[in-house]
View 1 (cartoon, rainbow, N blue to C red):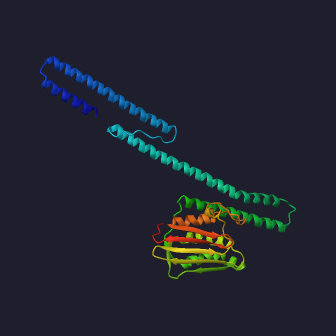
View 2: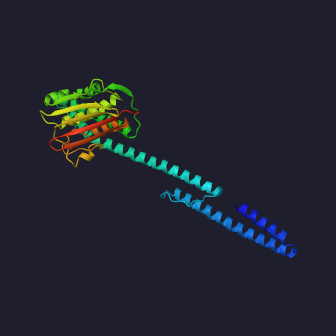
View 3: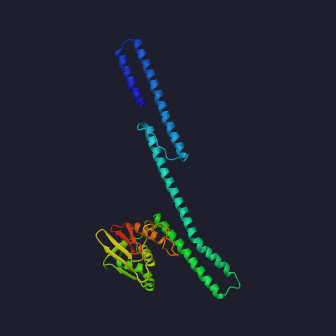
Length: 328
């Protein structure tokens, strides 16, 4: 820009000198042009210096970890390009820093959750271990305490395993397989662990699906997701009740509905049932509150959705929709 101004000034001065033949006038014209050029150069460099100062001040604010400030835009010249590249770099670093901070907070929360959940079983193990040190303890009690310690250790192992799995799902780090499976076979496998519970509570546990319906998904984790939902329905259905699992398919999706006629879920609890560690008013004492959260994450990871409707005293329905263009 400065070069263009200087060229134009010299060009105008040349024309004036050519038109004006008087030597003294030519000297005046050249002197005036020189003064104008010097003045323009001073103003230009002062302006460029001010812009550089603004860029330096901007970088100092970024270094002080203040909120990302706005920056004045300079559209022309190399300084404008420099400003644009600096701003892009700062935004990139800011996003990376924000992501790293979120990851640290998430890790801290996960560790806090794990420590909170294993505190109770660890306390039980400590107490029973101290009791086992009593030389006067009967053999019957000793065997009983050893069995309870084994149960608590298994509970801790289960907690840690499932919390880590849930964390991997939420962080999109667990890679799910892509395989074709018959839906009815998948649903039957998901319900098998609850056949004894259904018999004890006299609950009619039914699976209804067309034999030919197929679904592309990770069968292991999809069975885990559906099992958690069926388990929830079984636990909240009273003696002589009903839990039904029904599947149908259209051109767009495979739809799975899991329904019970149990105690239902209150309106105040319904929006939170898929939250990690959330326990409703009617949750069992052994419930941790991660089963439904895990189910939702598994289904969402496979391009699916899950919704729930419920009415207190009448029952609950879970509606899963797995879209045909599953991407795993």
